[in-house]
Each structure stands twice: as structure tokens, then as C-alpha cells.
Length: 358
Picture 1: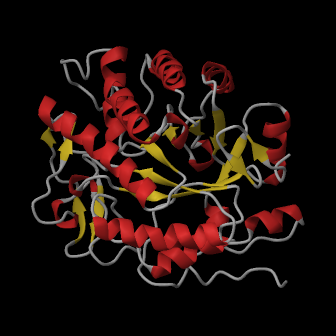
Picture 2: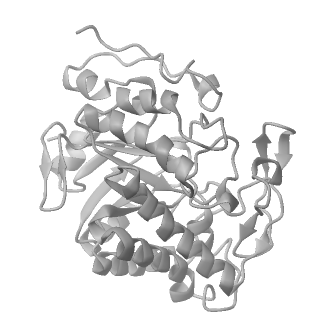
Picture 3: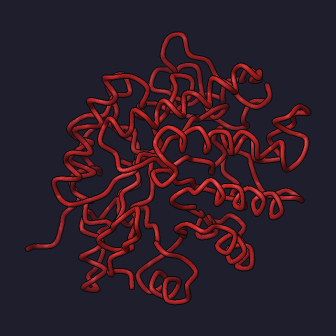
């Protein structure tokens, strides 16, 4: 099934492989996409669906060095080169909208931007800055109701710009401890107002962002990525996690979103998302369901044949193998991944991975 097309009234994909979003830090000039990035995504256009690296809808969300943005016309022009490259090869591409929230350092932000989060509690740990090396995360300012409303508007505006830039849709990054999950996660969100203090409050920001983006570009152009048992950026499970994500998924389904992209980090040492919860989330969501985390061809085929998902996402294997679909189809060996170049500028470890001879 992995190599069979997926056709619905709202989307047509050449196969059921998804290139998962991966931060690559190549937007070296004012966080603007460039021709090198267009080459990288174009090389991988044989995926059924490409999802870009996390892309900030706001200057305040550019917490990592050299990640791309999507909030001005220069960004739109840069991304248009990328989407044209993918579409020229018959591919489909969504942009992942990622606001880093408190996972940030002021040295990485442009002038006038600030670190924001649900509360004023900084994210534990350090992060890379180009100008100052490794630094502790900067302390965020706790978002007011006005800040929250502005952030929702920024997501909606980025979705509008995404369509202008030629994207087939957007994915909301509500996983891995970034801004949306900072509101979702009870270990991070200690608010006592309408955006915290229980399941409904913690879900509110995610649902407002999803509703606003769907209103601007249409719900079938919007997906969302979730990681209920993830531990990145000091999140982690909490007592109501399963009830909360079921409630969230049911409401996302009512909005009519295109897909839920469920991430299980157990292959990287995090607790697994229980199989029963995956099944319940799949039942709760009436759109497409993407599973990600530790898949190879055999595991992907098994999950698809069992009806556990409609699409399977691959991350590092796509990073190192531009022709991953062809390699898996023919049971060919995969390239060795160069972890040292994940986030370094330039083509090395980015656009220079070899492909199979024609």
C-alpha cells in the first residue's frame, strides 16, 4: 500500500509516504528561503507529501538560528521558488507553521522581537546561537490575552501567505514543546485563566489557531502535528494527557481539518504513545491520519494494511535519501546519515546526498 496513490475529494497524492518536517537551518539571509532550499525540497519531491521544516509565522517565533519565516513578502517570494521546484516535479508540499515560543534565545531573534510563552517560566536547558554559542534559553514574557489574539492572527496571516507562496496547505506544529504545545501541556502551562486550568483551557489556543487558519484558507488545507507523550523541550506526559488529546482531536475533526499527524518519539527514547490511544485518536478524527516515528518500509506497510494510518511519515531517512521512495520500492540500501551537518549552513549534508543511478 505504501506506494499506492491516495485520492480523496480534496487531495491527490502519488503515494502514501510523507517527508516529515525537519529543521535544517539554511535560511541564512533574514530567515528567508533560498535557491539552496528549493534544490533540497525539489530533490525529495517523489514523496507523496512534503512537509517543510518548522517555519515561523512571527518574528517572535524565530527562536532557532537560521530557521525560515513566513510573515512578509520576501518570505513569500523565497518560498515560491521552493514550491515551484516541488510542483515542477509533480510533488505536493505543505509548510509547517512553528512558533518556538519559550524555546528561544534573544540572540536568535530579529530586532524588535521578544521571547513569549504561556508563562514567564524559561525552558530548561541550552540552545545554539550563531553569535554567542550555546546559551541558556531566554526567559519569556508571559503572554497576555492581547498577545494570544495577536499570535492567532499571525498564524492565520501566515496561512494566507502560504497559499500566496504556492503551498498546497499548512501544518500547525502542536508538538515537540513549541508554542502550541506549551499551551497544551500541563507541565508547562500553569495559567489560571481561560487558556489554562484544565483540559478545555489548555486546548483553547490550539483550537483558536486551527479555526483561524481554516477560516482563511479552508479546513482541507490545514493539518496539525501532535505528540501527546513527547518529552522534547521539557514537556512530558501528565495525568489528563489522554483525555485532553481525545477532546482536542474530536474538536479538530469537527473543524474539518485535512489531517492529524501523530508523532511517537519512542524510537528516540521517549515513552511510546500507547497503541490504544493511537487507535482512539484515529477513530476520533474523520480526516486523514499520519503516523510518524521509527518507521521503515516493513513497519509502514504493516501499519497501513492494519488500517492504523492513511499515510506514513519518514524523517531522517528522507533527509539522507532524496530518492527514498525509489530505494524502498526496490529494497535498496540507504545512505548513511551525516548528523554533523543537520543544522550547518551550506550544501554539505543537505543537497549532496547521492541518488541511485538511473
